[in-house]
Each structure stands twice: as C-alpha cells, then as structure tokens.
Amino acid sequence: MIISEISKRIFTSIILFPLVIFLITYNQITSTILLILIFLISTYEWIKINSKIVSIVSFLGIIFLLTVCFLAFVLRGNVFEDTVLFIYIILISICSDIGGYIFGKIFKGYKLTSISPNKTYSGVLGSLTFSFIPIVVYNLIGLQNNLFLFNLSNFLIILLLSIVSQVGDITISYFKRKNKIKDTGNILPGHGGLLDRIDGILFVIFIFGIIKTFKLI
View 1 (cartoon, helix red, strand yellow):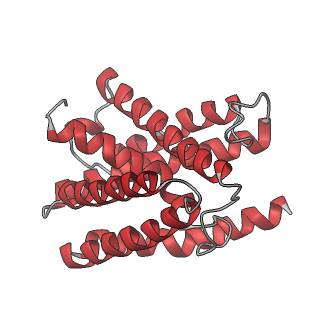
View 2 (cartoon, rainbow, N blue to C red):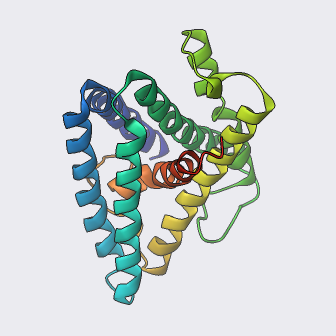
C-alpha cells in the first residue's frame, strides 16, 4: 500500500512539476493563468472542507488565498532574476516536504502533534535538511543572487521557510481533521487535493512576500 502511494506520488510529481515550472517561466500570461487556476481550485477545496464551520473561516481563508496569489504574481515579476528567485522559494518548500516524507517513513519515531498523526520529529529533521538542497543546486549551476550565497543569513532564511512550510502543512491538516476529512480532494493521485500538495508553499509565499515587501532582507 505504501509503495503504491509512493509510486502515485512520484508519477504525479514527474508530470506536474515540469508543467508548473514551464508555466511559471514561459511568460507572465501562462504564470497568471496558472495562479488563477490555483486560486479557483484551492478556493473550492477550502470551502468544501470547511462546509461545517462558520462562514467567517471560509471567508478569511479565501482572502488568504487571494493574497498569496497576488504575492506570487508580484514575486514572479517580469524579469529572469525574479522568476529564478520565485522558483527557488517554491523549491525550498517542496524539498522540505519531500525530506519530511522520506525521513518520516524511514525513521518514524515520536509523533510531532496529534493534529497530523503522520508528522514526526524525524520528519521535521528531514524537512530542515532537505530544504538546503535548492541553494546547493543553484550554486552548482551558477545562478547569481545574494540569497543564494552560503552564509548564516541565508541559512536562517531557509530554515525559517522550511518551518513555515511545515506549519502550513499542519494548519491545513488541522482543518481537515476538524471536519473529519482525509484529503482536500482527489485531483492529484497520491497527493489528494491541490491544497494537500501546496499547503506549505502557500505559507512560504505569504511569509517571503511580506519579507520582500517590507525589505526585511
């Protein structure tokens, strides 16, 4: 069963990841269309999983999703350097998620929280470790940006974004658990719904967008 789920995850990711990167990098039109689709699907899933909770929760969630999509549009920008940086922060979240999944499955160990039973302390360690993969890869291929330098400041930013990504995952898990729902949907085989896949990314974009907007880095 576990192997089957992993196979589905891998197969979906192999198809989905290159497509998303293409739409983000091709031009502003394709990236904007992608953001609109993400907003619409995420909003639908959010409303669905919170159908039993007072409407204010759904409303605030929609505002959050709209804000994140706007920040994503701004961060993606219209120059190559901005797009490269935008993909970088997304990759930090993705690698953090992969690291948590792999370490959690291999090492298991103590549960992190009852909100998300599959989360373990070993998974947290895996998330933090794997979140450094993008900065290594970006340096190996020679991409230039002050945020890609190997220094304490950038390492702390990576750790922050990894933690934020994990908090985002747990937050969505909280609402799913509260409504007795396993997945936000079934649009992505092996992953569940779109929100199941991008929950951490949403929070990372939100926090990084605020950091950039207020020039904290």
